[in-house]
Image (cartoon, rainbow, N blue to C red):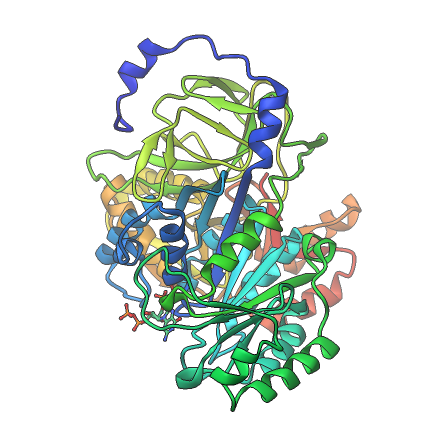
Length: 548
Ligand code: G4P
């Protein structure tokens, strides 16, 4: 059934079926929702594809790859839009494996869309971090890990491309620990690398899995030898075996043994070595996700925290994406279910608007298609049609006022002012910017002492997307111009009088309201920001803010 059969749906609607709390508990326990993160080119797409192939969700290699969204930066907005459109279907993928329901959330690789990426991470219960063994920790990895840290998200690490010349594995672990400030617990250890990559030793199982290159089949089984003292091992690799034993001894002495609790607390990451393109080490990752990664967890809301096993439905929107059908202005709001049971045709309360809505044509995201949602449980991601009344961070429930917290907005690094070519279109420009701002496509600031809107973005590509969407969706031709602003910080102060003084001072000329009405300081340089902070020690300058 297609996602657009909403009329038929409404006719079919019956009263929601009562779902027992035991059923909900069972369904929650078998769910795993994780995000896959990496610096571009480390092998995220390849690994995603292999995970889907192992689970049987897709049969052919190349399916995900073909839909991969803008890996190499292009300034051609048409291309960006097209790629982003295609990636709607592939950014959330649900599949079953070993009687578990796995929700895999992709994160846009291009750093210009990193704000989207960051918010995707608020919707997951664990993350899979892919590292290129030749490159080690890269810039995006650091940023993404810092976001995971905000919620202590448990992280599994996959060191990829061992079939190539790589850095020394011990040195890599050292770098992971010192740069990312996370304890590493190697679970598998590589034997050789590049042309002499022989396989991995599974430290916990005391098994050696032998590497064989070039495997496009999902059911590829690698030969496994039991025990590091297995004589066959010495026969096979007379040159490497002593070295391996020495290394294992060293690793076991110098690194941390795997501890489930430390992993769940987000302070330790189990590390696996492998080669995604050769299917090698992928099954171990999938098993680690099912065996160790947490099922949906409790979530904080403003009034209380919410257990995933509670019977009433609740959830929040973490991402909004334009539907790419140019004939419609529809957008899809990605909602993470936090508790209870969602059923097709159900009525939901939109808490910010304090309004009940009946959502028809809600979609689920399968590995290779979008399908009509029949039902969903905590951990699942469902797509609600959004006609402009949903924002990132909006919460939905069956009636209780539960505003979920922890959905961040990041202080933008790039700023532009918008100027329109046709002054008659000022209203459309403002409406367009307001809606795109609510959607999170760009941040919109209204300076307190001028009428020009200032746009802020985490990556410059965002401006191009916004310009193209203003044109296509709002009929506004706008040009963006550089500004003297170099950074923004949301400002708060517990002391109302000090805040009022601050607003009246010369610093007040740099204040602006964002789309949600929060006050922000727009600094003209790093020095300007520092001096202002020094001058106003009681005012807090925030680099992130929460959904209003
Ligand atoms: P990304 O999503 O993290 O950006 O990375 P992606 O999977 O696209 O992988 C980036 C490149 O690394 C690709 O090569 C991919 O084939 C290669 N790769 C992934 N896993 C491995 C591995 O285990 N070993 C080796 N040797 N290479 C790997 P490309 O040349 O950029 O693309 P393509 O021409 O192969 O499609």
